[in-house]
Amino acid sequence: MSKTMAINAGSSSLKWKLYAMPEEEVLASGIVERIGLDNALFSIDYNDGESVERTADISNHEVAVEMLLKELIDLSILNSFDEITGVGHRVAAGGESFSDSAVVTDEVLKEIERLGELAPLHNPANAMGIRAFKKILPDITSVAVFDTSFHQTMDKVNYLYSIPMEYYEKHNARKYGYHGTSHKYVSQRASEMLGKPLEDLKIVSCHLGNGASLCAIEGGKSVDTSMGFTPLAGLTMGTRSGDIDVSLLPFLMEKEGIADINEMIDILNKQSGLKGLSGISSDMRDLHEQAAENEQAAVALRIFENRVIKYIGAYAATMNGVDAVIFTAGIGENDIQTRQNIIEGISFLGAQIDNEKNDCRGKERVISTDGSKVAVLLVPTDEEVMIARDIERLS
Image (tube, rainbow, N blue to C red; front, side, top):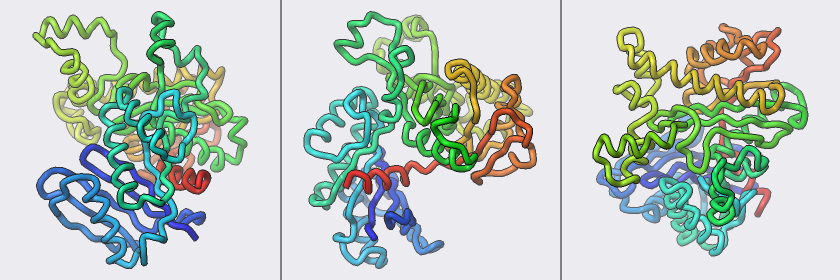
């Protein structure tokens, strides 16, 4: 039995799971939040119900990793660091450089950092997590698992933008897509749940959370996806605008006296989406609570559902049919009303939701009626187990 760690490092956070492999048993999990700030939050869940929570001064990711590993020893979850055989790291952007997960070498790490221009909020943080673990556990196999690699099967028809070809040839300006690890996992689970070969299925995967994307999956491969060159494109999200007319940007910049394009992009990333539309919150739960009395909240919810419905219709056309629609991630797994409204919006495809089956949160199940022409599934995503599997495959 080997023990592997799946890591998802943010700019001020470190989320992790420790697995016994190949059994895929979760031995412990946790998160370190507010790294670099006063009173950082540190938590571990283990032994099916036991937990440790505390605040501490955690100045950087290396200190967070040291504290985490020491705690695993102190709690007897590990007897020594030698028990850890591999560490896998989620990395947002792999560009065209990585069509698969990769063992981390100095060259791979440099490329991850270079690709930070595609995901400036994510790749630098992912690289910090990798460096922190490599410094403390230098001899352990490190694997980078890229959100973009699943989408490298897209055809040029779907990943090229209609701009001068030289921009792609010189600068790799194209659609990359994100959430690939999640889309890959839930499509594989859907195949198992339906008892049908993945190669025979046409699937639309709806990863709906604060960040949201859809993916058209045919024969187990990504055909198209809603996020683009960066995670800003596509659906209306918690704080991201999704698709807009780019000519709107200079117009708004002039009207609002904004001189720096980066300030405008920051508004589209952090002040738009559900938060910007509602003027209330980026959290769907808050909007549902106020929708009856607040028109802006109600409209924001309708816009979110509208964009998902449009993309499902487009992807059904792209694949010339659809066998299954999957809901996953925070909203997809837990928002009963939103799932119902979206499926009612694609009833023309023959999709029918079973309201009794749909009345659940976070439980893996088929939620369509027995007579539905399109299977509708709720599949909680598990990106960490996909990382753990890739560690095993590449070690």
